Length: 91
Image (tube, rainbow, N blue to C red; front, side, top):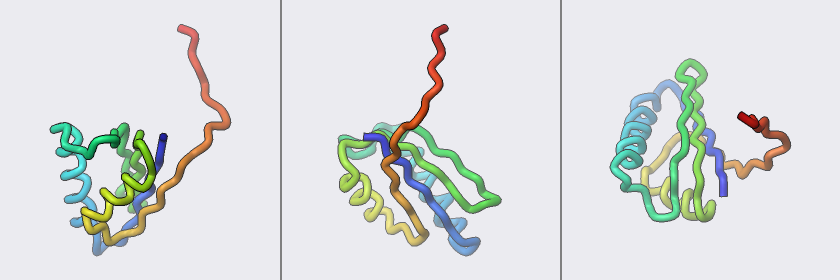
């Protein structure tokens, strides 16, 4: 299942957020994410204090349990999107 997680933080949490994403990227590159979890993309807007992670996971509970292990202190919002339109190229 595709899941989008929106991260929102305050200025005082910036170092913790940057540390979290560094660890997450390292775990992904080293193939150390829990079974059933695949990180597809991280987009970040530091000026807006928002990041979006795109996941492919077996289930949402697994993803949220893994997030708890990082002791995340900022707001996270998981979303299971429904695709209404997708452009497909024929070339």
